[in-house]
Length: 374
Length: 110
Image 1 (spheres, one colour):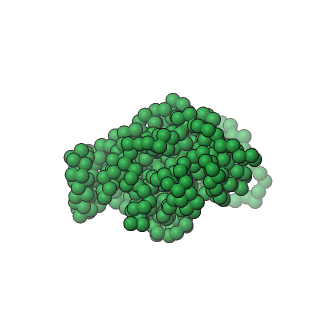
Image 2 (tube, rainbow over the protein chains, first blue to last red):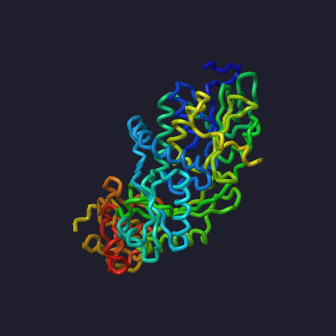
Image 3 (tube, rainbow over the protein chains, first blue to last red):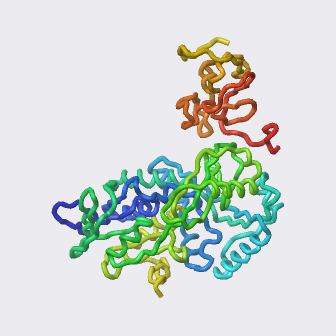
């Protein structure tokens, strides 16, 4: 690829705005194509959704109204073992990937039936190829001997899993740097200008020139996308998460609301709150989250909380990603989603391949932002 | 017990004395001391091992942040020793690895 050369600027084949899980996964994938990649990261004043992640590699129920989303979710889940292996071999970091299945626990029979209906519809939409089971309380006990008596049952999907999102971010970043990638934490991108075949990107620390530009800035994409003829109608949705002390291993599988890390930490989620850009925590929501967790697993009632945080999901109006190449500014790409962990292997693999080669077998046409203006 | 602690008490206004037991050995403390101070005074090293790799640890920040001072106090595991004042007769034990939630006496579920 020809390198953009503009005097006084630093150059790369591809500049990628946003150093979170989405951006770093794509950056690594672009390096596989021999491209010189620079990641422009806002710095630690950024909203940092990737630091607040719950860590599920989750399949069941994703894409219930969009079969293509279910497809790419499952494709990413299948790609995960290979990416985790490569990261372990290159960085020595074990991201603690486990994909032995997961359970979504339901406290009422109505909720369990509604989930079963939803997953049955998804199985029909997938032509029968969508593995799940509905479990009653006695069956759930086979998976979790410590399950609470109030639980009605669970839906089980053998393709679900989890990993440690902080270790993942570190592994992606270390591998990217080890291969010569540059992460510029010089501050928020102020301006994107197209000059001929090149993009000229201004940050407080200087100017970058590049032939291709990928916007992976989470909620920041909203402001950036219009500068390259794209639209990113994303808004924040807060999730609060509780962290409990480390305890002996008692959960062999992740659930939608409670998971245990490799070190024994219990992570308990979550909430879905429309509170603007406030990433704080609130006592009432933390109490609700804790109360539900204790109903699911009564032995948690004496376990001490050691931390809690709020983080902002990057949501679109329908909850699905935007993957789009700009027609107005060829070479500019927009990527936004709220499942940076689950979709991480897809982003490092076929999605990065699409950006590098401008061809793909991914069903990207359904992920255009134009769907919101129809 | 042989006191191998390198910690010496600074001159201060005398307080009521209490006796706590660190791994069954009596240690005389002052009423305002913390359980972590008792661990240090007794020279209990290590006072815990980590759940991640069983590496040996001892009280460090003494202000509730680092969680290195985790001990079992009166049968309750994973207590932050630096945030809990001593009581007469308190029994302090090492916290080895992660807490086991099963079969923990009055509050356990087993």
